[in-house]
Amino acid sequence: MTVSRRQVLSGGTAAGVGLTVAGVLPSLAEPAAAAVAHGPHRPGNAPQGRPFPPLKDDPDGILALPAGFAYTIVTREGVTDLSFGQGKTPAYHDGTGVVASEHGKLTVIQNHEMTPHMSTYGVPHIASTVYDPGAANAGGCTVITTDRNGRRTAEWVGISGTVRNCAGGVTPWGSWLTCEETFINAGTTWSANGQSGVYQKDHGYAFEVTTAESRHQIPKPIKAFGRFDHEALAVEPNLKHVYLSEDASGPNGLFYRWTAPAGTRLGPGLANRLSDTAGTLEAMQLRLDDGSIVPDIAYFTSAQLGRPFKVTWIEVPERDARTTPIRLQFADGTVTRGKKFEGVWSNGKGCYIVNSFAFGANDLPADATKHDGMVWFYDYADQTLTLVTYFPHNPAAETEGAFPKFADLTFDGPDNVTVTPWGSLVLAEDGVRASHVLSSIPGGPTYAIARNQISNGTSNGAPTYSEFTGPTFSPDGRILFVNIQVPGITLAITGPWEKYLS
Image (cartoon, rainbow, N blue to C red):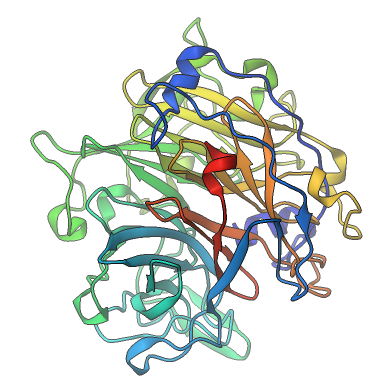
């Protein structure tokens, strides 16, 4: 999320912002619409949504919101204090989930997407949380508790010594699976900001983080889920399957399914419960009616909106990728690749999957179609994949420029996704120029919920670039938590959500 988008725009690790357009989409056919029904509204009745009021600039220059909505700052990098004398809140806030709600208190677990010494405020190495001592001042997770109104009451380190903790997913048993969006071998050296070191362990894994205090965490990789550039994941309610996305290119990444061994149901303590080779890891094959495999997701356009396509799966030959990255273990045409498989979130009947964009010279096959974002729905029972939201390409999305006059009318680069308590979606933009939080109705329109007023720079960091990350709702639908990544700020947004999202 942080690096790959910027590399496309600038060839480096700085950030960039820009402009594109997404139109109102036609409604889906009834089977696809019914698949998204989940939450307080009547079962089988898909959310309709309605336009949010215009966004109003924030006098504090942080977050533009519609009338009737307000925000409070939950954490801020280098400003808020970690509990138990652990230091300051780390930087680069990313994937986030509300994992518990009890006794008027919410527990939120949050990723910090950093390499060593990427920021002054890396995740500190706290005893019992450290995976790799060689990954100094790098990524990890913090555990945040708030009151029912989203006001922070505590924050502590859940895992440290990991790298580029990007997204992940909430488990049905109330923990967070954090994903490393990287592929690094032990013995690799690193240097940044006058510091240097050597990674002592391999990276590119998923880890489980619980609501427990630091001393009770288990910083151990879940090797059964494979080693690759993990982005996000979702656990199927049957506790037998996990679906995982890969944000990678050269070649483009894959979408995976992990299946538990016969007689095994998933639960707390995955790293200790599962052997390194437990279960089966497979890559997605998206098939046309004649059985042929679609080589890249970018072949699909808005013409396929609402039409389910059959999915089959092919086993990964060597999941720990000792000699060859997993996506290179498959010949082109034997799996379905995708540029920037990003957010994944389950609604109980299936999971939504985001492809952020595809338009660069190396992003897609020569005869495929450029796009500025796709959202898919994978149906667990039918094993089909349906395109539910499509952002057509606008060439302006490939260039940088001044903050656009019509910022709130132009969207691109969806990234993190969450399912609201009413069954609609909220997307976090990682596009160019303006950055929004979006309300997205599967098969229907997309509206701006918020605009990041801190993000008004270029890929050279002049003055500031920042994406939105980690949208997640409290179970009662009162609070939308969302992050601004740079500077790292977690926001709790309140307002009449049901009026617009149901």
